[in-house]
Length: 239
Image 1 (cartoon, helix red, strand yellow):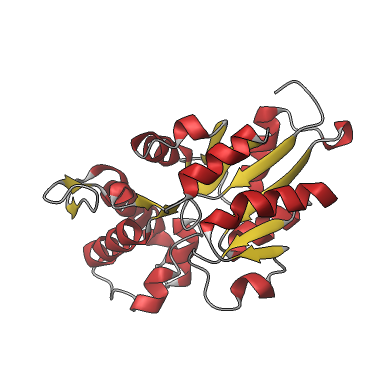
Image 2: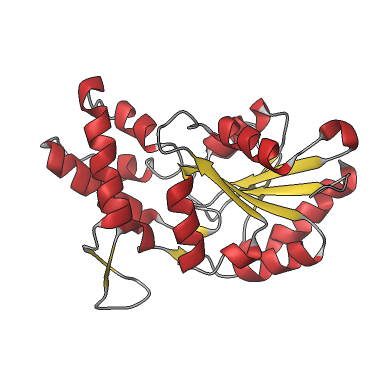
């Protein structure tokens, strides 16, 4: 990564590369049950996909003095406890993070982007220690040049913090001509990228409620995974 200029494609994980709602929602339900608190309705449960878990717990009125315990409970079901049905292997039990499938067409698009010479970096608000085994399990690691996520201690939590951490790790240098674009499906991707001076290509197949990406100023929205390479090439042709 020493050569400049470089073109970096930052990729969100949940709702962009993988369909992860089943495992996230199941883990959230278990968390609220363990806390003895009412489980949010279906629409609210879907809003847990994208933002940092602590942000969503706060939005659902989990008291400050219960937040650390709630995060620990969530992470135990999401990362460790094999209690959920595996969508990829019926009859097998897995933790929430593996109740997950790669969106059709994503692997092919990542291969094309790599062949085009882009540096592909995962940039997720999910803790990095969770991103790595998910990418390994679904054979995404070999299609990415780097995997960057939030810190376990919540000191690196928001998308802009993750992007800056990624840029620091890869030696990104805008003054040397390096350019980047974010690929994501939620407001967190768009707002985080903008805070770093970047545009976002939005993924309609993800989890954004109607109108969310437009309201947050997304650069372009693509409808299907097979449009990804063309959208990235279009973007860098003019930026």
